[in-house]
Image (cartoon, rainbow over all chains, first blue to last red; front, side, top):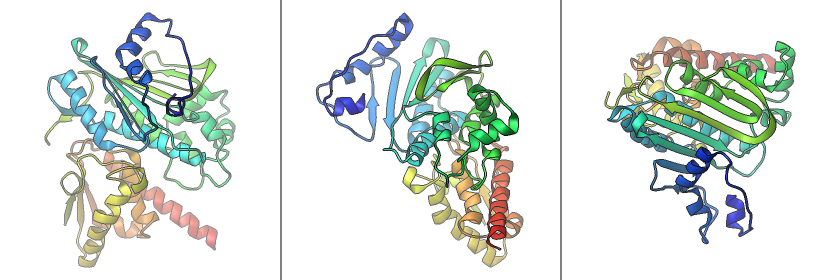
Length: 249
Length: 117
């Protein structure tokens, strides 16, 4: 949509049928920006609104932005600033994945988008991270021959005799992608890092959609979707039961 | 000798490479860690790395910083292991994570040498 807007190509769409989704997208300030006549293609965007939803977009990894968003999130959750290392790790891993994999595919750098929704009365903050890259499985399937992850999906299917991508996502979370890949040993720890933050109770209610796989930690469900999403969407929450550290150490 | 990442580098450590964003592991290794490591080797003293006080670490920052000493700067695990000490009272799990990164980096280097023979 950014590219369409920047190049002044007209496009259209429908509102979500779900009323809650419709309300959230309206409150996010998305349409205020979408309907602006002046819109340029930039490396970063900050979509603020009068509501409790704040959206940022960027191509690089911005750890300072992560820390700033955590300051605000922890104030909503605990009433004062705290450090949330699991949230920060999750943000860095996801930003890094978007940055790396678009480049690995030889594509133009892609934006990641992060929306943070504050639900003050429930002392809860919801993080939604999305990129419109190619998604985890398509990315893994199309690695060049000299890449560490070339052929890794086939090797994982062979090694574990697993059925489909939803099974593979489980293995990726457990760090098996890193172990199965040959060559450079220093990649493939991003998504396990996010999953570990969930396991250590540093974040809650992790959910993910990538290509044809849906994962929801609240129900333990890994499911194959009928419609594919070409990208990666990750959602999690921060609430008062999650581990955090004092702001000053 | 001691180095505290939060006060001597950044309270918000970032990605792996300088090209990916601010306060990267590559920057930390090149500008802060490696000079101290070399000084410590020269003086035959230990170097304590204090990991506490930051907003959190990505896995790539840690690997590039410490695994990078072996992969990129060609220092061996045999030299680094006895001289590097870590403090991580806030997140004790970071220490075995770094140790694993360094061990894997050494395995990688050993395998490369094996291939070259």
